[in-house]
Amino acid sequence: MCNDTTVSKLKNDFHYTLSKFSHELRNPLTLINSGLQMIASAHPEVKEYEHWDDVMDNLDYVKELLDELSAFNNAGHVKRENIDTCSYLRTILSSIKPTLDYLEITLETDIPDSLPSMALDRIRVRQMLLNLLKNAWEAVPIPGGKISFSVIPENSGIRIDIRDNGCGISKEQQATIFQPFFTTKESGTGLGLAVSKQIAQAHSGDITLESAPGQGTVFHIFLG
Image (cartoon, rainbow, N blue to C red; front, side, top):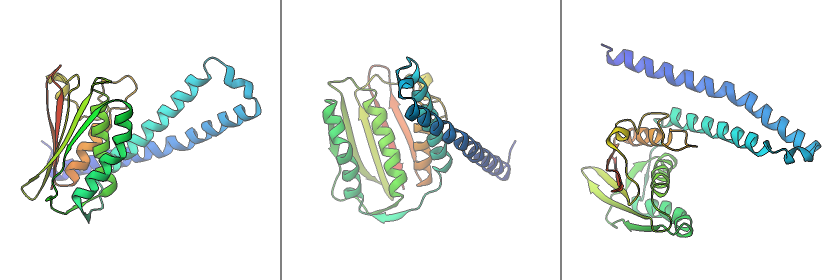
């Protein structure tokens, strides 16, 4: 059985390898992207090739995957600062409201004015919440989707519930949904929820969920 020191070393080795792997891939990827742009600039007719868009889409996907790997590798490193929790959360929701309105998805919010100020990493927590909200709006019917975002004080922190009326998640999927690279989406990287859970845990919290097929899903986010 591995002791805490061994587990910590394995985690550090894994993150180092992942960081080195991502870095080594970015350089040739940048050269490939630049080369393709030069070709398209010198020979515009190449864009008429029937598979040109597929090539560029695949290149964008690899770049997105590397960005997600970087986010996963750094999700546990947070820089916390005291913030006005109410104002901060309302600003995040305001930023996605136009998108949800366009998709005809109803957003219901319940953020009390009495929430305590908290020490959070502004960038990481925003990333986590947007990941979970995006996961919700991709699961709900369009139009007719509904997402609720509610917050309550809990112990020395807060609990955020993000609930949707989407397709739901089976018990089998729930068992692995937070594992890296697990996804049910054709174009997903499978890192969004893994990153989100790491961010919550780095804030002395966690993420759990309740769901059933055809009955929607609620994610409980605890931040301490």
